Length: 403
Image: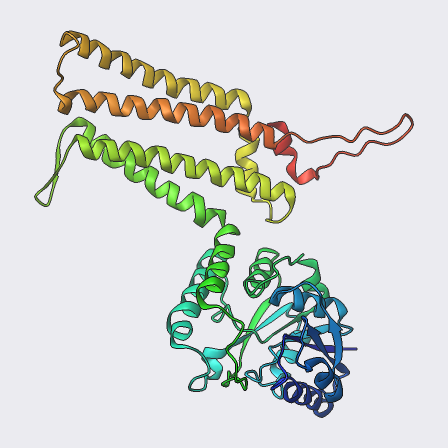
């Protein structure tokens, strides 16, 4: 069997039969060996029987959620290719040949683009059309170097084995983003074809919750891009804190009539500490996610870990801490010269703030190095005498083990 058309369903009695008949007619007209599968998520309005009467194979999926229903349908599919689409009569199941053609050319994932194909009046709420979907699609392209223009399109086709190999886990609406993100991270071949979106035929409100599901999509994109979540914001804060802080530490700086003094220096110290901590979190996340297999191993991170060791991290942290301690001693000496009385804070803080910042960085570096070493510990299973012990780690993470 070449094609399975999967439709998730939860109480779609008004439209499910129409969608199934259109999909069945497309399969018959195109001469494709195929089937229509309805992944029912607990309908109580007769949707199952209506779909079966229209020609679908009904697959009950007990675990609730859009992603759960779709994954249940994908696993039950018999076709080499799968095309998924909602059962609310908003997608055109009579015009699926562009998806099939791209899959036949070797694409692993074929996305529909509603903005290129056409969105009927009233088919998409203005908030989704002009803000939510464009913003999430832009973030997805930026974070994952993808050319997909419509991240949230529910009509898409893919190779069944390629989708299963991604290990998709999301149970809710963010399943749509997870599929694209993991396909991009796995370097699967992704293409896009225009498709249309019509006003759905339901009289009830859709299952989609704008703010909740929008946040779940955004949260997923952030969690799967440690570079943009931790590294880039941290690097920006670190550069700004160090650059501006070094200038202000020498004396007041005037920019466009605004004078930056010791209060700015305090803020710069905070930027340095927060930025460095964010970059450490990026490193922690990359090591952990790479070893667990839900993010690909970064060659740059592996090279960095190959050069880093517990001893080097401790020595570097100690050196930074020593510099901060020397500065702190000079600050106390200056205070002693004032008989431990009132200080001229414009002078005192120029040494005290960098010294304390260095001490904080020292602690972060030492503790972070220890934590990386803990992440690098791999356990060997103990087996009876005569058995074979297997190390629970792949060769790709040898540099992590050295920590």
